[in-house]
Image (cartoon, rainbow, N blue to C red; front, side, top):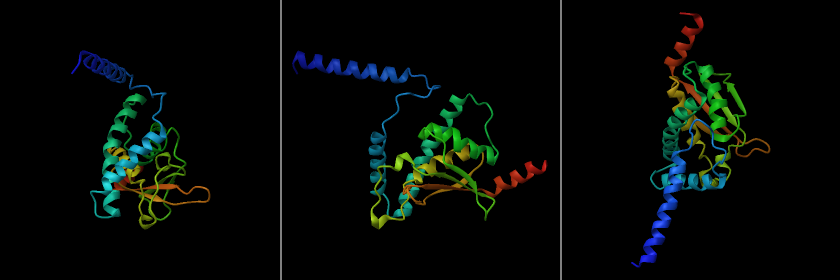
Amino acid sequence: MSSSQVQNMFKLDTKASKRATALLEHNVTRPRRDKVSLSAFAFVFGEIIRYSQNRVLGIQDLEAKLNEIGKRVGVRVFELTMWREKTVHRENRVLQTLVFINTVVWRALFDKQADSLERSTENDDEYMITDNEPSILKYVSVPREMSSFSPGAFISGIVEAIAECCQCPARVTSHVVPAEGMPLRTVILLKFDKDVMERERRLESGK
């Protein structure tokens, strides 16, 4: 290898080192102004789906895989948002936890608040968070033969992890419910554990 090639490699390594140093020195308590481009994230997310799809047998397994990946992200999102919010008190009531996810977490992830938060009229342990236009699904194209597949399983994994971090474990699923002008409208359904709802009733009764 010639001396000029060695010098060029050294210059490239120096540039990479400077970028890495700048990233490590970034203040994590402040949200970054230079957002990751949606197209770049969509590419990475598409590769995650493709990677997972090659390692499962069916749609349910694929959604479970995305959910599991989302959980790993969710734990880190929870830690980061708690740090940025300077919050010492951790929510452990169902409604406060849902409001925290619906507002603080959604803004941290998608730069906006979720479109709605509702309680099921049929089951008192079920709640729904709705996002009319989930940005991470904007460039995801689901084949016709996989029409029942919900790529929002990744989001439901994030929500499930955060609910568990708030001591409100729940089974969380994602459902695409299109509406007029909103083909990607996604509903995140949370069904809280029986123990959680019993604790809520005891707290409400003051016992």
